[in-house]
Image 1 (tube, one colour):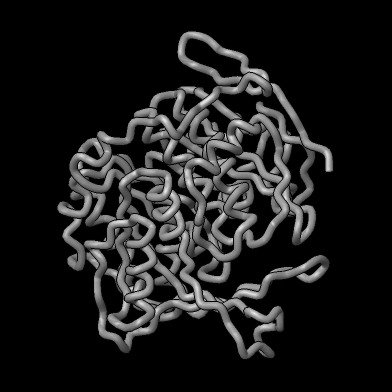
Image 2: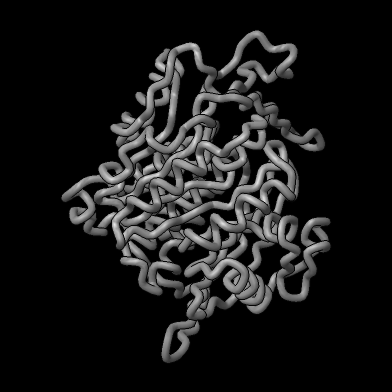
Length: 394
């Protein structure tokens, strides 16, 4: 498989620096001084839903298997684990039943260094979200079946979490569009998680930014439902938006330079130039007034072979894109986007959200997700030395 290489341009205020692919910024993340993050408490806080994922352990189809791997799955959960394993003090907030599944979610988070002090414990009879996942092989696609209606986390409401205490040391507070889709999925009259989110952002420290992974899931809600809820959330509260070309094309008709939204939805696009991505980000910035837009781009050549790249654009014009479109031989793709976001946030946090953080975040995010997608299940059981070794190799 050929690898696409390109020149990367990091545009800074007052001028531009052209970075050739063989001389892209070199970062030694093993030498990052993270001591300042450990002085008060979690620097990163996120909330959402954790599901129990059922994956056939014998390669049978789900209807035939009698042997199932149970594993935790959740966008924000995977992200918190990823950042904690990279050394950033991280906390995860959710609502779980006081039964073995809820205890497992807590225990696995703790063993990976994630703070769970603000878990909300529900009666043991409340259902935790479930996901049945069948891993595909070419030409058979992977299949996901959600069982998330009326789940325990979908009722995480305002008044349940002491957000001022949970966010007192936070520099970045994050959630995803998935969390806000649970109410529509369950046909609730009110969006409990949205109420909790508004309470949290009102009580966060002034210096704490808000990040969101748009993460539209058609299995949870319609385009119209998502657009109605997500538009004010992003426009009113979000500083750092992580998204995909497909989500913005499907919900808002945003194209990518030479390629229309219709072409993006149909998968009818060719090589993306830097100007295409700049125009895409410009449209997103104008619509939502965000400070920073990051986009992940997956090229699924088959069930086993994907290619990956990403880019980040600041509202002031700062731009950085992956030096190469990199191939991945997949073991399990779930959680790949979340782990990229963990690496991206690592770059932003360790560089104090300076322009250099965009480049560092894209490079660390790309390396982290490429490693994770060679592993089974959602969680990024990787360490900094592995990420650094891949950065050095690149």
